[in-house]
Amino acid sequence: MPMEPDAGPAHRGPAVQDRYPDDFAWCYGCGRHNPAGLHLKTYPDGDETVTVFEPRPEHMAVPGFVYGGLIASLIDCHSMATASLALYRRDGHRLGDPEPVPRCVTASLKVDYLRPTPLGVPLTVRGRVVELGQRKAVVESELYAGETLCARGQVVAVLAPPAMTPGPAGAERRPG
Amino acid sequence: MPMEPDAGPAHRGPAVQDRYPDDFAWCYGCGRHNPAGLHLKTYPDGDETVTVFEPRPEHMAVPGFVYGGLIASLIDCHSMATASLALYRRDGHRLGDPEPVPRCVTASLKVDYLRPTPLGVPLTVRGRVVELGQRKAVVESELYAGETLCARGQVVAVLAPPAMTPGPAGAERRPG
Image (tube, rainbow over all chains, first blue to last red; front, side):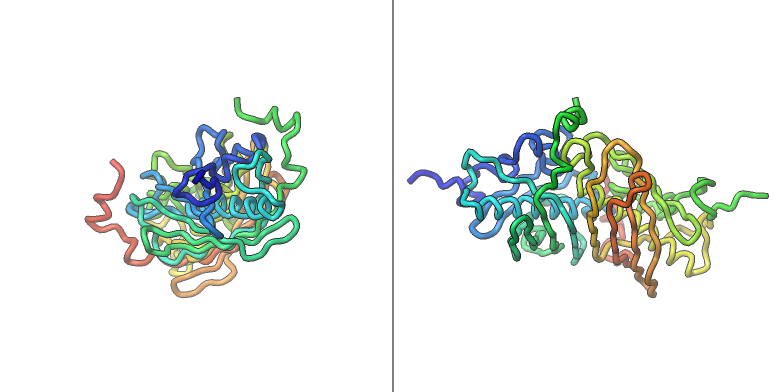
């Protein structure tokens, strides 16, 4: 059977972020065009989504534990991708279609830090859409170190407003 | 008159993060010992606190705008410092005293992104404590680009639990 590009991370088809429009692929957290960024990659996994990321040694809060800002970033970018994919699918597409995935931005982000997150192991973020509107989605994401749930996020995503769409002026603001 | 070390950012006395214990000064966002980190500095300003930080060009969401994870990090580290200072003052100290400032960690973080935050200008975060308990504080922080309010945070801070206190094992986990 041919591979299903939308069938889960095991298949390693495109990530959601691989299919953002070029103008919206510069995010420090997850933009494929940002050479200095973290390059988070969100894959569909059935009705859920998954990102796996191992923080760098410097991403510490105190020695041995991950700093909260990185955890917030992981949950933020992963939840945006989860929302974007849900809106894309709602419009009849599947990941791998030629049309780019619409880019969402964060309206609000809530993270509960349940326990210290250990440094030195890959972290897994799993997301699911709990509410889907015309131009927005609410996503719940959970961050695990191994099997241990360390943080939980609830994120409201909205389609990027026209003010954030790069035009000729936006192009000028791109890094060289 | 002698300078008041606790009288506000104009005087540039020590920042809160300058007075964290050495073992708790490694945070990527604000640790003075983290060579790869952002080195955020929170100063008292009357009943409020202030951090000023200019994101690097790569800290973008899309060209021209700051990515949400950095905004969350600024609000997180600034709010932790605000809470730590409040607990320190509650115990009768003032910034500049020889005793180190106790280190708080994040229990929960909520950020409302009110409008896109422009890249290329210094951002100012102002914080204030709205609730102070024995071992925790609730802090509200607002992030401005110039005079424009771009994001608002509410953060619950608690004193770092014993599990996060570096002992000999913690010391081994420090970066070389």
